[in-house]
Image (cartoon, rainbow, N blue to C red; front, side, top):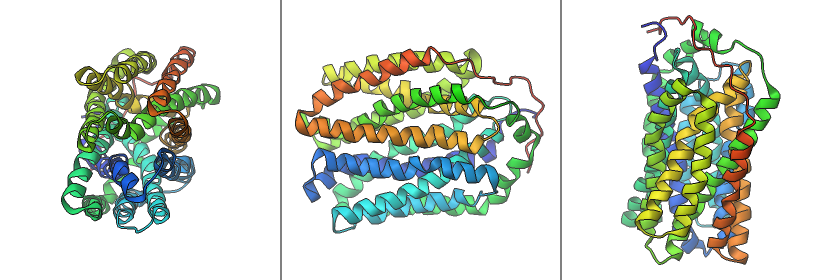
Length: 392
């Protein structure tokens, strides 16, 4: 049907996103084990997240730039495979610094995958771009949420070296995408691809949006980094911490299926503004209340931040339609990398004062992001377009 989502292509892209973010989602859950193994401070533990974030995020705009200029669909299977091998081999390293090196290698794979995959997903989305991008994003969100569920039982069962098995599913999915690469290559030549690229870039709006995304990402990345450690500091088990983290991530993943169609219906900007405000309120609930209500608050944060990744990425593409790969790299990459730096700063605060104080300071991020989001212009989304039939 004309204008509909290319479901087969989107399934491949979403599955690849799941496998890639499964690899990256294991790292936060493994932090308590690495902390015990190498006797790490909170700062050094957060440095692992920063290294992963820097490698997977800061350089994403460069991959996005190359993706806009050249045909680099081979980065899809290659990125997935490297992402899994890096984190898997990292778990068997004998020293902290070698672990750090392989975390960086894994990050390079993640950085190579995301801009090209996000651009292809936009081409495959038909007229329902927010809904289509949400289907792509839900794969990543679910993968990231499955990371703790997969990693912790493996390590509890086989020891820290059990993490090597993380590379198995990513390698399998990489081979599947390699086999189906011709179909994904064909997406960039259709009428939908040309339509998506229509319009002029709006650098001012893009800069403001990236600031909002960075502040929202600071909240997300800090919680992903410190939730397992914070829960353990309250007297709970490491397993309970990984379950709470998975709750936040999987709620965000499931919520993506709701926020995408909602953004197609009411607009991207209202969804971004309201979710930013609610994310701050849910963070306060998580910090202030332990137990069931705290878990509800953490799930709410996931729903308000992680579930709207697709919306904010699409807004970046619509503010920068002439450079979709670069826009995706900036939205998913650079802003997330800067958020990772903030997580390390909070780790230093946790070392010098305590972790709960650092989390209270974190609440400022969504407050400022909410105020700035009110100044965002509506995106020039095109709602009526002529779209070619999906090929194949």
